[in-house]
Length: 355
Image 1 (cartoon, rainbow, N blue to C red):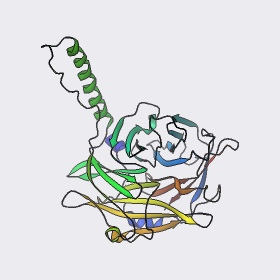
Image 2 (image 1 turned 180 degrees about the vertical axis):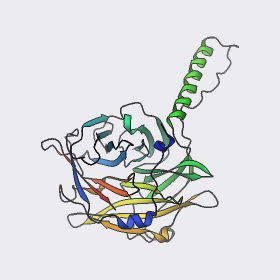
Image 3 (image 1 turned 90 degrees about the vertical axis):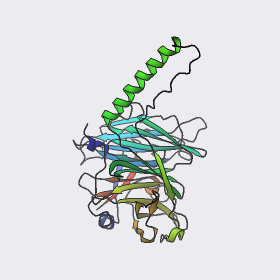
Image 4 (image 1 turned 30 degrees about the horizontal axis):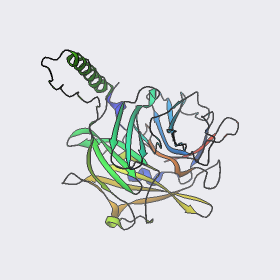
């Protein structure tokens, strides 16, 4: 694995690309996904995509489950022909241990998915190309997590990740080192060796009642909180046109000049349906090491879906929503309808917008 597969595609001139995204989206239907019958409770929560170096496409859908003891679901469809995604050739479903998986994003081949329970949350990290393998990382946070965005950038001169976790209308920021297959293998090997040594020392202590040394962490990522922010109307001079900007999906995008932007995807009531809006905000870290958003320079766009189910249950940012940067550097916005419908081959309507 090259380090590049742990990094995001950079965009040349993010604001210009955002302005050039088509206002009307393109309808795309997925079939043969697993169907969940209680559509009054269950619904899609997040949508992410990844395209590998061989043009194989991966389409990730996170899904909540309403039953008391049910955990959430993650479904991944994949296709070897990136130009023909209507009929996928493969499909995998996994059942995480937590409920309510939310809005997610890939950085390279690594998929970051938030889960929440009460006022706590975790973020699981998967290799999206091997989604049915073990969870690579799992990190706990003391707040909710309805959606997240992840991107690599330079922090203190080092390659790092910026993770933004959305808790309703508040966005928490974290930085960490980046992942690689080599580093994952190295850390796992060290942990395994330490665990074996601990078991040996437990039964053959050098001195009776001597405390055992602590095990090293088996996690590669080390997250540090660098503050939080809000984009609500009037907050810190925010120029958004809604009182409370809480989003089902967000995405982080890095510019080739080193700048980092957040795209917030929001649906608002509009008659018998939703109106879908995207908000572009530049993020930066100030001299004290805290995250800041350029709230006085937020760009907003109205987007219209295309095809499929109409009304509030159609494709909207309220349901599965996400952001992807294509290999050519174009920004793509993603949305799904509320539910996978039991009609023929279990269809899911989606819409994508690109420049």
